[in-house]
Length: 247
Image 1 (cartoon, rainbow, N blue to C red):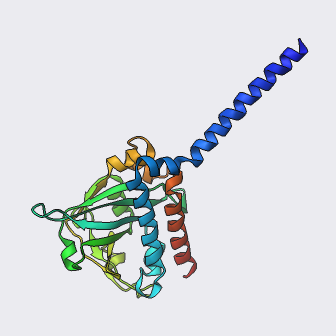
Image 2 (cartoon, rainbow, N blue to C red; image 1 turned 45 degrees about the horizontal axis):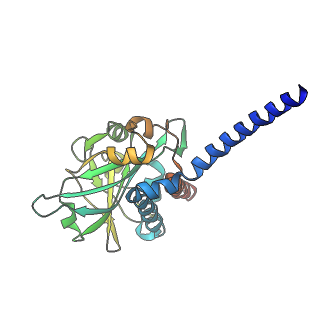
Image 3 (cartoon, rainbow, N blue to C red; image 1 turned 90 degrees about the vertical axis):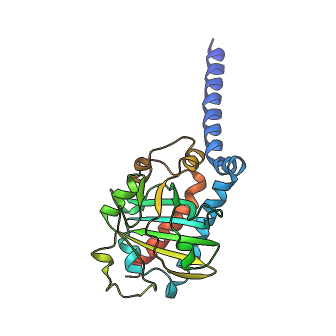
């Protein structure tokens, strides 16, 4: 009887261990599954991460530290493109993340965004443009949390100043809810994208999180960061921590 009881315990322990092992394996292979099932999303996360690394690696021509220190949210759109002939405007997909309310040094999981409309590509002349947006105050953050807003209409926006040590003697503190930047053919500059619409990218949200998670839940820090997006979020942490440390 005792041996039968011991055998039962061994079987039960084995099932628990197997289940835990399977759970861990599932978390570690999430990135592989995303790459296999949705390679475009995985590539976009890599592009967004590389875009931030390259922009922040050029402090003399990058975003001023004071802007990074005070930003509430960041929106990264790698490889924004011109729409097809006859349609007009520009479009791109990327990711947004916001500081969480309970910890100014912590950032939310990335929320997939779609940027469309406008004709700002003509200002640079490139066929593919990286777009970086800094949401500077609570009002701008609330517009982003609404999951759909128009730049310059629902939230005031201005082309951001350049240079890590650039003077903050601009109107951004008083008037600009969003600062906007672009990079094309290696040229990084502030850009006016008024008229562009930012909204939740439903398709990419499903691909990344396995279901359509509300924008507010993601950006308020209520959703765990999926493993394929951790490198992107780690880069955001590094860039903004370095900006704060440089003050």
